[in-house]
Image: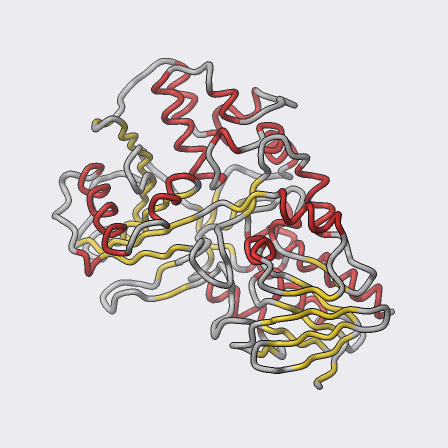
Length: 415
């Protein structure tokens, strides 16, 4: 049995941020990170898909501007140039949408910038709000909401959406690319950490005095406390056994919070000179943006929520076919896309992730659920991950912030 002060389960952003924070503490803390995969980063995954194209982000791609993102040193240092979205294209019912009334214009501006702030403390779902809109405005707004929150408007709490918008601190409205790639942030956080890879956790046994973690390979690790950073989808699937079971309050939070499905598609194109910064549509893969333009063109496709449900249920060749059809419809001047130029990442089917990111379902009190999910269990098990953050959930910033919070709780226990 290997012993240390703190075991961190998971080497995604939350786990690496927690371990890095503990490593930088004034007192010496022995930390061991257990990661199920052979790679680090969790939902951050930088990879070069084709030898003649730059690396792309298979998972999270942007840093959303807010005060915590500037306060966390590694995130602040890793912030690169602002994202310039440029001109948009809206493609519905087989045609490009031009003009429209005030509601359509609001929908085209997007939920975050265009209309969320007009619905404070509104009960029910986002879908309930959109019912009164015109058909075209509702189409555009629903597609935008689903792509942003990874949930259909009918499933998403309007109150939670407004609260996140209202409490977002000092955001200047910009998204940022990571400096270089997100791989740089992962390497920075992982520097000088003791990380055991390819070590899926089977059981977490906790008592009044210690935590023991048993892995699939037969490894046995003991510590004073453990920081659990498993994604919400993995917790919901109950792939890791907790002995004794987690509290009822924790289990309810795990059950009731939502996890949105996400399918991300990458298409290598010979050139991209459409002059479009992003496209929103009712196609099978509804959202597209160019990651690289010119002769090194790479288009990024995004399907979330119900749009991702259909793709997740299909075989790979069908998903590629639907992606090619979507590109051909939205960007008709492009040459036909070959299947070998399409790469698909289904985060819902990824064993150690099981979904994109969390959302608050309609009818649920998101604050209470996230507080319960983040709460320690007996001062032995601490919890981190984007779903535990009450404001910046569904973001890299929320994951990193939760890791720092859990590390502070661990230092208090060890004092």
